[in-house]
Amino acid sequence: MNLPNYFLADLPSDATLSPALLREACQTLKYNRERYLADRSTRSLVDLLDGLAEDWLKENFPFRAMALEQGPAATGFSAATLAAGLDSFFKQLTKENLHSLLEQDLGHVDRLDELCATTPEREGSRSSKAVGPEFLFHITAGGLPSPALSSIILGLLVRSAQFVKCASGASLVPRLFAHSLYETEPKLGACLELAEWPGGSAQLEEVLFAEADCVTATGTDETLAAIRLRVPPKTKFLGYGHRVSFAFISSKALSARAAHKQVERAVADVVAWDQLGCLSPHVIYVENGGHLSPVEFALAMSKELAQRELREPRGRISVEVAATIASRRSFYEIRAIESSTQLFCSPGSTAWTVIYEEDPRFQLSCLHRFIYVKGVKDLNEALQSADSVRGLVSTVGLAAADDEAPDLARELADWGVPRICPVGQMQNPPLTWRHDGRPSLGDLVRWTDWERE
Image (cartoon, rainbow, N blue to C red; front, side):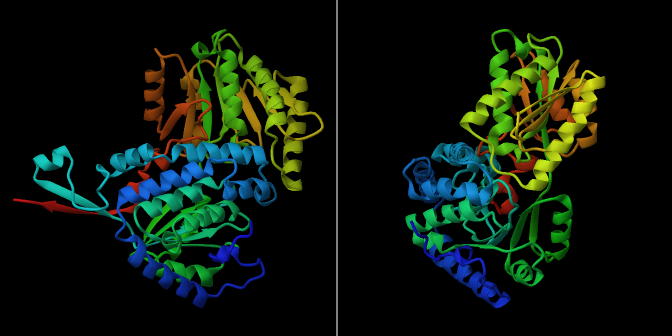
């Protein structure tokens, strides 16, 4: 299948983009939104997205097939990893989940269509309407495609014209999703634009900053700070910076009956998207006293990672990343001679690495399926050991018995963790999750309240 040149990202890599071209694209997007999107009902958009997600879950869907065929070369992920990631994402994009998101963030499914009220609002003779930005400019990071897809979907729900600036080399999957939307409803596809250029192209970005009502950006904290300085004061800016994640597995969750299942789930979190997302664990803290000791847990993880590599191989990596992993391994090989540290790794490749250490201090992983396993006496010791990243944690995967899970979750919440989920689901957040503890739809809209006599 050959894609038509509907989007700027479809142009040849040597095509030149100019400020004038982008300014014209912005005006066209706003015009198309006013004609085709502004008056669409929320429920019709939900039905559209629900059907589109079903298509993306079909093996013979042309756009999915192209993503799996071209994705390994374009994204660095193996076809198996891409397939698993796409399945996880689109299984969440259902009518029921979209309705739940609208009700959670806005209080009512029809809040974007008309002035409406929840029960407390009716009792207070009030009603409200939420209004999305006329024009959204998204600056996406490289790596995982799912954040860019989420941005497009949220922008569509709030009826915004959207311009998505993809990181260099990262436009394939978002572009294919945009084409699938265009094929399903061309008029809605015409309210979306995607392009790709290296960061720091100030002349191009200044045009979009000037045109947008809201700018969203994902990247390092330094990148976000630089963007924020360039966004006009009147324009809303939503930045999502670098975050890290870890897991905690209680001794009660490591009973003889459940231990192997917890190993499988922990490995699933490491394998998903090759551990490259902010939701992927750097460290797995294992409480002492379970059926598997922390070092036995690390060994079991290594065996499971070897099996997963056969079914879902890690994607290609650069020479520099491979050298970093090899260097880190060498360090732990030497440390293992003189201490209780143990290194388990894939023979003849850098495909996966498990480091067991008694020192519980949080450490940043090399990623690409490189995981630390550390023994702790309880959750409190794990949190003390992770104090260096307090306030920067996105997700904690939790494996615990039913009778202790509520207290552990409360302790994590009080420490400042915005998302707690079962081990095995760290890279599979629900559609309703609050990114960095913030409402995804609620962040985008402005409100009008009507107080009646």
